[in-house]
Image (tube, rainbow, N blue to C red):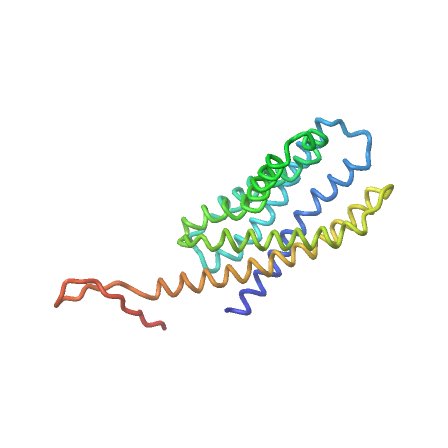
Amino acid sequence: MNPAWWWRWTAVTTAGELAGFVVPATVGAAAATTARWPDGVTYPAVLAAGFVEGSLLGYAQASVWRSRLPGLGLRRYWTATGAAAVLAYAVGMLPSTLGERLTRLPTPVLVAAGLVAATMLLGSICTAQWLVLCRAGVDRPAWIAATAAAWAAGLAVLLLTAMPLWQPGQAWWLITVIGVGCGALMAATVAALTGRAAVRLTVHLEAARDISPVRDVTTGSAAGTRRGRS
């Protein structure tokens, strides 16, 4: 593991995710405490804020990836992350959007729907990013599992820290401050865990690049030879 690169990834990714999370945290708090927001405005406003969050996260990660993956498309990576974040927010908002209609569903249907929604929520960003990473040579699906697990841990940290602090009747700015403060813990958790996965994947990629296939002139078969490094 490269400690310096991991620290850089963790710091930059934490900053990018936290900067992006401020936007949906503010929009969500304002929408929840202000009666002036029409119902048809809240949903698209949160989705737009989610795109900002995902884009800033993607840009931060891509800027670190590029030091190891010069072929990575920076714009493709951050736009894919932003679009996937919109999907994640759309899925995450379904319970509050559907409300009592969910309680009318049979329990097996509700459980199945919950599993599908959780898979989409946790798998959206990592799958979109992996599809872009494949073009840069990182085609191992380990990124999907590692990033999904990182987001599961990060969201758990956010909920466990923020939920006890949020109380009915609080001002929107206080809800935002609590959300952003706890969001910083979420961002650091996701950054640290995805950083470990990123380091492992780049080490594997560099090791694969370090092996060049050469032709055995006596047998006509290919053999792997390790190239020397300067």
